[in-house]
Amino acid sequence: MSGVDGVVERARALVGVPFRLHGRCARLGVDCVGLAMLALGRRDAPDTYGLRMGDAGRAAHWLAAAGLRQVDDMQPGDVALVRAGPMQLHLMIHVPGGFVHAHAGLRRVVAMPGPSPWPVIGCWRL
Image (cartoon, rainbow, N blue to C red; front, side, top):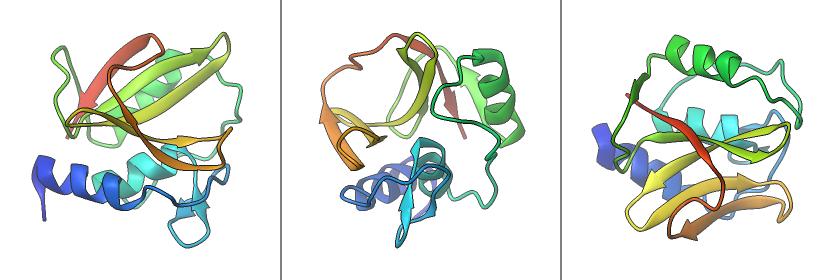
């Protein structure tokens, strides 16, 4: 499946996958960047970051380099860049009714209903 439906379906299929920093494989675990990479069907993603990285411009550059464009109207299949803490950026995949994201605290990928609990910096679309 391709397009928006493919992104949403691939993101939802990763719910329950273990969390692993810099993880890029559903079998071994993913972080939020790995989740976005797999949901979007991309092969490469940066791994030069830690859990505490607050440079939104750098993150936006990575998203653009991955072939995504920033949009103003968030739709299912979009990648949301949020500020989950003072020095913590986080990526989530918008799905109908909420988001799918790699939750470090719960140590797995989860589906989260409703709006983002964190400030949304921007959203990007294939």
